Amino acid sequence: MTLSLRRVAQELGFSWSTFKQWLEGLGNYRALHEDILIALAATRRAGIAFYTFPINADVPWLYLLTNVYEVDNVVEHVEHLKSFGINASKISIILDSGVERYWKKSCRDVAFDYDDDYWNRFWNAVDLLKSLRSEYWLFFEVVIPDYPNDYTKHWGKQHCLWVDSCTNIDRTLENAFYIIEHDKKVLWLLPAQGYEDVPESILLPLEVYVSHGLHKKYRIGLANLCTAKSDSIIVNTLKLSREFCRECSFHVFGAKLTAVAKAVKMHYLKPGDSFDAFSWTFARSGVYVNRRGWQRYSAEAREEREFLFKQYLKRVAKTLTQR
Image 1: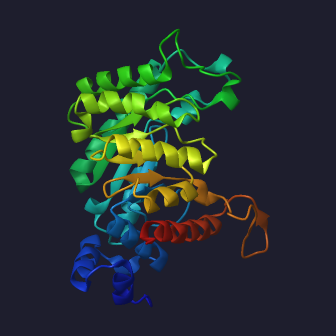
Image 2: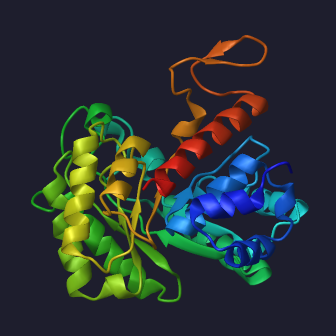
Image 3: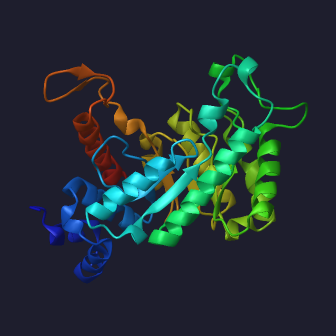
């Protein structure tokens, strides 16, 4: 590794002793590409984690976002990290409920509710992570299945998951309390749903979670921003959330990195928060030209995915270390 670790520590504001202790805790950190190591260090310094899953890319990453349909990939990636000599106890996983796959379809094809097959898949996924935790001492959170409101384009109508006067927020909250009672030993990630492109609606579930003191035990996932196109809507939602609950720890689902950068700069995201993205598989310029001169709109080959992932990590590191 040609990277000057002392220089990285200095640029990120670490003392060398603290930085070296963190590095040694990772295990064989010299096996990590410098872009990965810098992004991990930036995450550590800011206290704000970036979750994703570098599937089909030979890239070790410690903050993994998977879902109940693809959770088996986690086992392979953990083994992959172990092969690099990385300390598996440093791995952090968020198990997403996979709502996009379940609900993102024409409204006429949408089920009334989660069916038995889904719940079997969900609890099997939770059990798999419990077994991984027992074996590797890794950390994981589980997103409680929720009811989105922002798939209007795919549904062909608004409020497809509302049932009479019971909104998607109401149904999500009902699910959350039921799941928590079902298993109080799991570290749940509470979904705060809202209405499509209505920032103020995020306050409705936050008021409920906070009034019950659930924010003191669990983090809260801001789940109404995945399809938001406007930075101002995303940032305003984060602003309202932070102003309402200074002590809450938030995870931001699927928000644009440009909006996350603004929120970090304005201190709407703080240590203990996190965000996720899979948009790194798409070239920022719209067209990715790989080493062979092929033009693609998204990464397909393994080498392409690795390249774009590392490029995205540079943007993540810049976002988290801005002054």
